[in-house]
Amino acid sequence: MKRIATILLLALASTLLAQDTQRQPANPYVQGTIHAIQARSGSLDLVTGVGMALRVAHVTAPPTARLAAAGVPLSALKRGDIVRVQCHWSGKQLVADRIDTVGVR
Amino acid sequence: MRRAPSTPACLLLLLGLIASGCTKPVHPGDPISGLTREQLDRFRRGRAVFDTVFTPERGLGPLFNAAACGECHENPVSGAFGDEIEVHATAFHPDGNCDPLAAEGGPVIQQNATPALKAALGIDKEPSPKDATALAHRSSPAIFGRGLLDAVPDSDIVSYADPDDRNHDGISGRVNRFVDGRVGRFGRKAFVPALDEFNAGAFVIEMGVTNPAVPTEESIGGDSIPQGVDPTPEPEINQEALDLTNDFVRFLAPPSPLRQNGAAGRGRRLFDRIGCASCHFPTLRTGKNAVRALDRKKFFAYTDLLLHDMGPDLADICLGLATPSEFRTEPLVGVRLAKHFLHDGRADSLEQAIELHGGEGSGARDRFKALEPKDRKALLAFLKTL
Image (cartoon, rainbow over the protein chains, first blue to last red):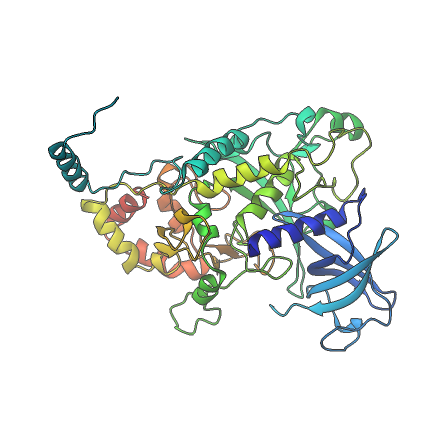
């Protein structure tokens, strides 16, 4: 069941990243490695994907956003960090509601 | 009506089975034993999807490496080795971070394009990413026993790691991680965490065939596909076709080793003695699994699923946490059927492959080279039984 749930979530994440996405599920999340971050403008690019098919997901984070557990500003994050971002859709943009680091490195 | 065999006939049959060791050898291409009738049926139907040759009208491309899974995993049976060599690229930054170049079309550089893409852009393959710091070649491995490897618990893989070489044996395997942090195990750099994800991704990166798990095509070096070039609606295969393929790969058995008499038997002991088995763990065990045939099974693996530094001469690209010189221990199951060896097929013999081991493999390599010629032959004879 856990594996199936993971696949479903990954499929959901991939679907979210489709440029021509028609449906926009509520409360999606994206978990991936930070490819680029601009804390001042609240821009976060994450590498995510399924197997070797990797994609970049762009998430907008409000400049006031802080890391959920640590309470530190986004500027504490850097390229290569792994994060889980709970989002909502604003038009065609993913906007971060909550950002957590995934402590595996 | 068929007559039931008599009691003496049953006893003779039983004695015959006992005398033959009760186990039927598993040949390359066979399913794992203990599958239900329904699972066997899915294995066979999955093999048909695996061998399906895609065309542009059926979803192939616009960029691709091959037109069928079975085009690269084919010799001598579906799921075995292939002659194809792929090109991969990533960027390894001075701060130690590895960029898989997802924004530039990803780490796999497709070597073919459909006629429509050629007509639109004048290219016959994906261009190399401009930010790549290294290119790598990758041979097509056999995928025997991958369902069993998939069923090994993450916690077991983590427990094998010894990143700081605390036991001072010169071997310091470590775990790779996928982009989302999960423990990796599949691919030459142990980057991908799960078999079904590897397969779903492979449909897209190898054949340009989108599916419910990966519903978007690869970009062309980061640029979008010109309109009209890929008219087949996404996903280009449905969930059932993907699931059947997964079942074929998951249920594809590791072939039984050949008899290890005489020299090969001595070679097996030498394999342990000179340290090959420190990374090429002969057996692994699966965890609890909903499929009975995969549930808590001990099986021949000859890998620890960890990354090991193989020295600068073999180094190529980074991937995940793997540095350019780190590679996952290659499972040696079915290696007797291989014609080329190592991750890029550069070695034409097992002996050459061993001699090219560096880094953490250099101790075992040196001990192999120091063996008497008859013992080297014995060890190679053992490997040729796998």
